[in-house]
Length: 233
Ligand SMILES: [Mg+2]
Image (cartoon, rainbow, N blue to C red):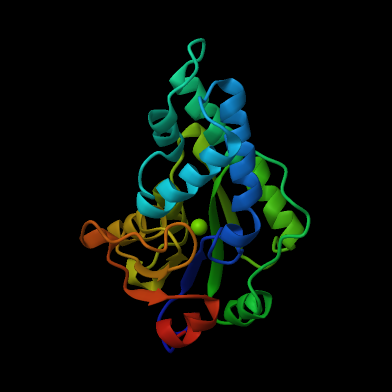
């Protein structure tokens, strides 16, 4: 940790920040989510569900996607809308991960280089088993000083994890940089703690816009290749 670096702590998101989730995992996970919803009572076909899911994700990424699908198509007479939405959410997040996923090109070397100058954390939100499986397949367990998995199925938030990191390691908030692709979960809660933020404009959330001052990132990058030059690391 040196005063010649702009930060002491770099806190990375995983999906669509280090891993091409949008390209590699969203298509099969969406298919499983729609299949589960139709099986529990969503009143549509697989193709229509997939097309609507993609459209809703692109145009209103902040809404509850699975609730929006229930609102769009309705459910069969014997089905319960809440259960159908819950089945989609769970099937999307809590699933077996494809073995051939990979980090964005150059990311492993980037993390190794950054670790010589900064303390690196990974904070990833989802179903814990699924997120741990991604970490194991990508072999990045040893690329970070710490890994925190936020269990969204139990309502945990990234903001709570960021606070825990700050409470554990202390120092001034401006020496922390949060790097991730979602304004709501990677940027806003970090800025509320006084951290600096770098928004990765990739994936389903790339076209969202800040809704308040906390969602305004300090830096914006299209991919990991821009991280060092743009954030002056
Ligand atoms: Mg992400």
